[in-house]
Image 1 (cartoon, rainbow, N blue to C red):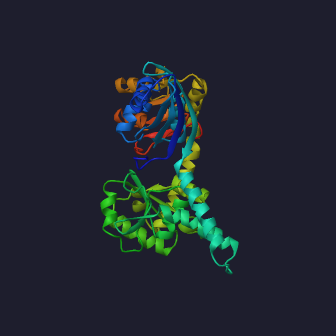
Image 2: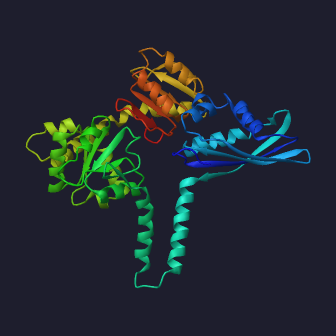
Image 3: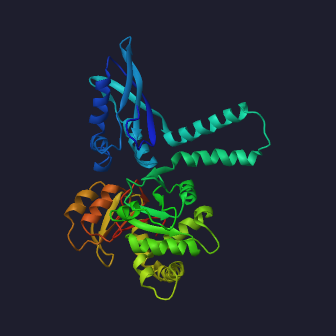
Length: 390
């Protein structure tokens, strides 16, 4: 039933109707009565065309002049967007000429279901094997490792995360263990070079992706980085903390290292230091600059506080003054018609890929919303901020 590769959730709903209805009547009612209800970003027809919503499955039976059945909708949207879409089903009150009622029973997390199946199978295997001297800690570690191993793939014979092809940005690391550690924390756009002899695949990828090099801060990492900078188009460089390897870094350490990544031009142009030392110097400078710039985010916080609960949006100029105020529902239309004086937008809503794409088309400098949705393509020229980051 799940006919899209990116299915994350499946919405389950029950439907009853006071009369005889067929599957096609129910599907027609779903599309017809939700059309325009949630705006362009969550229009069912558009979502199906872009494969973010899969084929709607309806199982309905009629008996004694009444009909009842189940609706299943596979979704590649994020949790919030899927929940909103699910809630919209309950506004359906007619199917054809018949009075109808729809109730959402659950929103199934496909990934959680897979993990539970793995865990249950692991328990079954453990119950049935001959008792050995392996301790429980090792068994738990091996079961956890199996979940991570399920996600690691091969890209042109190189260890990689599953999102290398469909992500605009990639992270290049040294080896397979580094890829596994980043997968453990949900980072799936990673690929390993596996040594100082950089494979031809990497330079080719770098021509069409935003590339971050993320290596250990030792001599081996220095050598790989030097060669990579010579043969590939590297945009940013990050490094592990002193005495630590990428493969054993914690989530907090990885997040900090990637947040403090330095543009490769600065690394290449720094004189008299090894590449990893250059990166650390630049990261320290960058941290100081960031500290000085915290006050510049204050206007965004003020705008968000004033907009909270209003479902409105503000288009701002270079000085962060209001050029125009509109509703979140009309934001996409207003952005299309915005003139050059608009440099950014702040709104009481979810930042979607559509809003990001429109902001890029208009050369905006920033987009600020309550929360970030399922944004796969992040232009390097655009700052995407949320209520948590301001």
